[in-house]
Image (tube, rainbow, N blue to C red; front, side, top):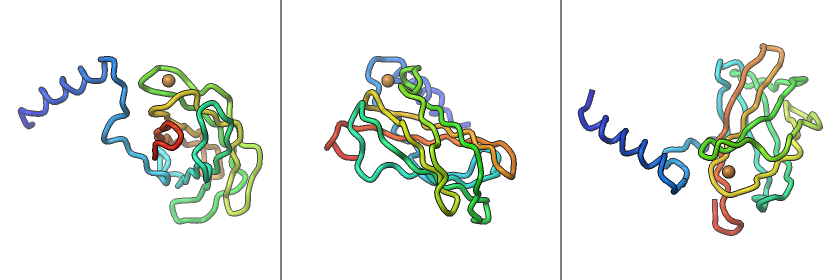
Length: 145
Ligand SMILES: [Cu+2]
């Protein structure tokens, strides 16, 4: 193992425990990901306009098998929060409608502050239960990203 890694890791740990909580630089913001056990491929679709802080917004999920076949009639529970702050989502978003082609509408999403949020989906479908976590960075409105 490289001898440089240990000091670098402790520096990173120090940075994580001191006040400034900017999101990690290597945060994976991919919106299409395999689920943890590779049972599904999940695409998360943010609202077309980035939502303002403390405003409700709707997201969409597309669910398919690893081979690309749309997965319908799955149950999806939504959880999440801010790992750097130790709190969850301020609301309880839910899938309110199934859309064509393995799509699902999530309503009731809200971000109460800027920064790094995790969006966690627990999926129960034909291939069994699995889960996936997405990262999203909420910026001040108009600040980009
Ligand atoms: Cu927070």
